[in-house]
Every structure is written in structure tokens, then in C-alpha cells.
Image (cartoon, rainbow, N blue to C red; front, top):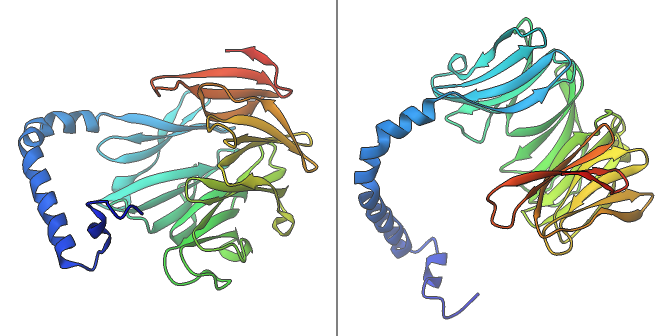
Amino acid sequence: MNPNDPYLWLEDLSDKKVIEWAYEQDRIAREYVRAPSERLYERLLKLYEEPFPYAFRVTRAGYIYMVRGRDYRLRIRYRDGEERDIVSSENLGSDAIISWYAARDEGDVIAYYHSSGGRDVGFLDVVDIESGELIDRIEGSVHGIVFLGRDRFYYSRFYRSGKCPDGVGAPCDRVFLRSSGKEEMVFGAGIPTSNFILVKSSSDMGSALITISYGWHRSRIYFGDLLRPEGWTEIYGGDFVSHPIDRVGDCVLIATYDQGGMGRIVCVSSNHVEEIVGERDEHLSSAAILDNVILAVYTDKDYCYSKIHYYSVKGDLLGR
């Protein structure tokens, strides 16, 4: 903390002068943007309401995606070309917003999270895609769905106040196994406040790949049998950010930003860490495995465009 900082006094939110200052700055900002805002509003509204498809997911039944326009829709395009809505936010409430979804690989069941006005606390609905039947509903702040069956799945619940079931104070995350409407906490006991947990499965649905993050600058990776959460153990991490990519054989591929911050890919196997793809002068945005090929997405240093490099799982460059 710099004692010479002229705005240091704004740190005291109990000071009436701070509140008055904030309201005055808000008034000044609104006055400054009022005229151009009113002039551009109708034009920008039309652009915003143009249907925008995103968040595509490939399943055995077809291709699921979201569409943002006047409302939010989840759609499926079957492999024979037929296409239809799964759900529209208009049917969930006048101001409902669908934030995200997860679907079974089979393409028969979908889980989507919606809330009033985009609030942080809402509902997770698990629905049969063909019939529209509501299989399950969870209220709260939840994320990280991993399906194990039609009505059986892991999910993470975020506690915004109070305490987690193990007594750790909020904010905190815990992982639950939900089955036929009943649930139990299966992972996260004792993990400190302000750590957030995301579970995903390997592409073969055999392993769990778990990220425990503290803010945006530190994370740890856990790994284990997908069906045995009591055996999930830490395999990688430190005072830097890392993301699990997938498991290939005995190797857990991880994108890690432990050197210059641009990102590299390592293989973790039996407590041994081997570099597969070294750090470049471009930012490693994401990576995935497809048919034993690593697809690494890089963004240039000025964040103007992205490109994909193809590597073997041994790290040999196959194309770009």
C-alpha cells in the first residue's frame, strides 16, 4: 500500500465522504455518456437482438448450442438435419436468462442453469431432451456438471454466505454426487475459504480432472478414478495457474503458466512432470485432445487473432 496514494482514503467504505464521492462520479459519468447513448440505443439494440449462436456441443444424437437474441434458447440439430428448440428463456420467466448448460454425450439429457435477470443464484434444471420432462431441479449457485447417468451426476455448489457443510466459512465450493434427487458431499472437505472447485471428466469418461483455484493467479490439479471421489489426489500445482486438458494413457496433460506466463503443456505421470510443448512467444489460450492429437489454440501477443497448432501427444509439431 502506497501511503502517497491520493486515493487511499477511498478504501474506507464506511466513510460518508467515500459514498458521496462515488455517487457524484456516477452522476458525472451518466451525464457524459447520456447523449451518445440515447443516439445509439436503437441501433445497438437491433444488433444485440440479432440471433447469435455459440457454446456448441457435439453429442451422439446431434449438435447442441445456445442462441442469444431477444431471448436465450437452447437448440439441437439432429444428425439427419432436423433442428428444434430444447428450451427458451421466455418459458422460464419474463426476465429469465440461461447462463450455461451441460449435456450427456448421448444427447438425451441436458442440464441448464437459469436465473431471474441473470442473478448469481438460480436453478439448475435437468431435462429429457426428447420429451421435455423435468428430471431434476437444484436451487442455488451451482456449476461444473459431470453426468454419470440420466439422473446421476456430480456438481459443485458455491456457498456465498454462512458455512460449507464441513464448517469452512463462505465463500467456498464443495462437490456433490446427485442421484435420483438425493445427494451427498463427496469432495472438498477442509479446502479453505475462497478456493473454487471445478470437476470435469476425461474424454473417455474414466477419470476425474479437478481444478481447485484461488482467485485468478493460483490453482492445483487433482486426479483420480471418476467413480471414486475419495481417491482424488493432488498431482500438480503451485503459485501459478494450471488447467487439466485430458488424460492420454498414463499421462495427464496439463496447460500450465508456471514460467513466463504464456503457457506450456506438460505430462504428469506417477509424480513425474515432462514438458510436451514448450512455452512460445504467443499466449496458449486453450488446448484439447482429438484422436490422440493435441489441438493448441494460441493468441498473438496483441490479442488480435488466434491460431491452432497441432501436436502429437509426444510434442511433435504436426501442423498449424
